[in-house]
Amino acid sequence: MKVLFIGGTGIISTAISRKLSGEGCELYLLNRGNRNGILPQGIKFINADVNNEAETAEKLKGMEFDVVCDFIGFVPSQLERDCRLFNGRTKQFMYISSASAYNKPVRDYIITEGTSVANPYWEYSRNKIACEDYLMKMYRENSFPVTIIRPSHTYDERSIPVGLHGSMGGWQVIKRMKEGKPVIVHGDGTSLWTLTFNTDFAEGFAGLMGNPHAIGETFHITSDESLTWNQIYSTIADALNVPFKPYYVSSEYLAAVCPEKYDLTGGLTGDKSNTVVFDNSKLKRAVPGYNAVVRFKQGVRTALDYISEHEECRQEDEEFDLWCDKVIETLEKAKKEINPAR
Image (tube, rainbow, N blue to C red; front, side, top):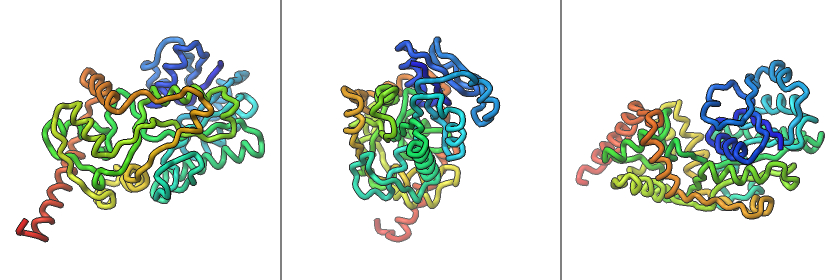
């Protein structure tokens, strides 16, 4: 199978690239080459900025593919470009959308691909929905062979997934736990969430490649394991061998007082604060035998082992740490002012 990935070095795409390269796939990556060194030998690279359509078209001249996938398309104009570049040159075009597109606030916590899409809280999600709408229009009107994929919260060995973090990733939350400091948990920690290890995602994705049952269809690819945020943080604390000290704060309050760059209105109100459990029946019908095998307890330990050996994964974020302390201090002060007897 001859495959082209636009991007190919992110959390999701790296796992897929590694899987395909080990299975004899003729894999091409179209990107600017900034992180290609993390990938195994045998992958072919096309060094170009896909946003420069003329340059990209020249480098792809005469090439056709069985599958093309865009991992880095965020707005409809980018997908319009993809259709111009690949219409008639691929048997399947796979687009990475987002499970955050599903209706918020949720109307039913069981999410299927038939769940309506609408997210008034997050522009990122609304743009993904617009991209999907455009591609399905191209499928209906021009037979453009699209398959839409909606990942949810997918992680790898380079980071620990948490509900709330700063601009430097989740390491500062882990550091707070190691230092015995309280960790802010949105809401009361009882909403359900689904975390998927990237190698599991890669298995499902690979099964949809070249799959005639996937053309014109939408799939989410997630684990079947759903945990409360209390369970997620407790699992991390257990792996660190430290006590879990939660400090519960409403998502609305956090979104109102956070620095603008954290975008908690979208990330929390429009996503993580909602209980969601994914029904993967459609994926399993299209890819018989698919099963996510990495439980969160295992994934956390894999990530902690990797992070302990790679300093670049331990990026401290003093600004976020101070913000957490300030939020907790402010709320504790308010409690004493309202009820001094406590």
